[in-house]
Image 1 (cartoon, chains in turn red, green):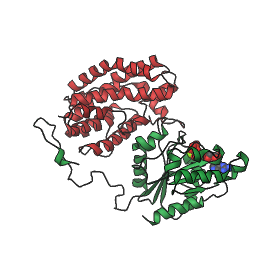
Image 2: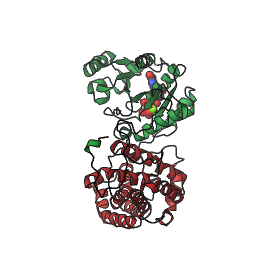
Image 3: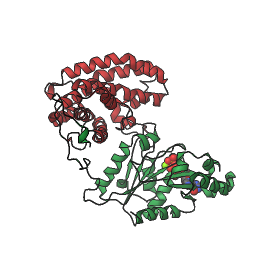
Image 4: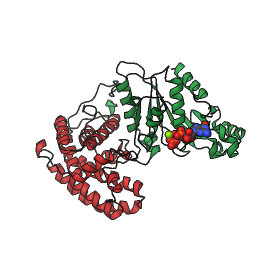
Length: 215
Length: 233
Ligand SMILES: Nc1nc2c(ncn2[C@@H]2O[C@H](COP(=O)(O)OP(=O)(O)OP(=O)(O)O)[C@@H](O)[C@H]2O)c(=O)[nH]1
Ligand SMILES: [Mg+2]
């Protein structure tokens, strides 16, 4: 089993895995005026944890626990992602993550563009990490990505944003534990929480002429 | 791959390793052709990067299979410009978003640009040349060697003749420095001989060319430089 330093590598925002160009739906919500300060960012991140955080963590943990399930898990994520723009964004990030992962470990063959959580789980398995560990990395990634995007888009005080992330860390751990506990379930029974407003926002965002983030 | 450093413990997740010595990455060009020469074009906002890309498409488009990746915040601006000017069809242009960090996308996390280059190569077949235009940035922005083979840094005279003297990684280390808009020099009081002297001092043996893309629509000295690179590949 790999140690904590390996997990930190996988969770590091500096991992060249394409994440910096994605706002996880935040750019659309900033433009709509729904996220405009640290408090509204807090609400957004809490919502992310409860929805895509839980789903991503469960699917990453499931892929890590049994890489032979990756294809079925990939289909399961398609079914849970109604917005074509978000499916594309997830696959683009999965592809980029796979590129980084292959440079570090011997990752199972996942095809060209797996969904991001599936790629994350397979990387974790190749690195010798556990489903419980990768669930934390997945949940953590669903809030640190948009938090960093908020600092760049809104010019928020980076210390205030990190104070918010620190307050959310225990929530993140709980979501990850719940997800990991369910990771052996059949694909159809895995979490499927969604956020329709973010799906709609993503579809609008994809049509903008000027956008700073890919999603 | 370092099999000699790798131990398998009894409680380890089962996994396999690719053959040592075999590149685990999919080849870029499926038929074994050498991949395209990739040239990064960076430089401050408005210095003439897109004008240079258009000129190079005009000059080299007939003789070479070429494609362009752009990193502009206005996702269709550069593609529209190249289309409008009739220098490159839409299927040869890809746009990449950079999340407010144009330098990150060309240096620290090059994945989206690499994906765009590979997508162009797989949809168009083997290419000779791919130009990657960075979003307009500052004097410290340079491309990663993991993304491009050679880089051009474009500055213009209207920023003042101090720019080469200020240096920075772009001016100092680019494989070719282009000082553009020489037609404007008299209007902004820029002394080209000062820029030439400072560029030589900063760059030692690396080449610098002066250009007015307003007058030379084929970017002749830059196209020649690229032909020279292709000839020795
Ligand atoms: N006078 C003059 N204008 C030029 C020359 N080259 C480019 N321009 C003009 O400068 C402006 C900016 O040129 P672009 O090619 O869009 O510059 P860019 O570096 O791609 O700009 P960004 O991508 O926005 O950073 C345009 O209006 C060009 O027509 C030149 O040699 N002389
Ligand atoms: Mg441009």
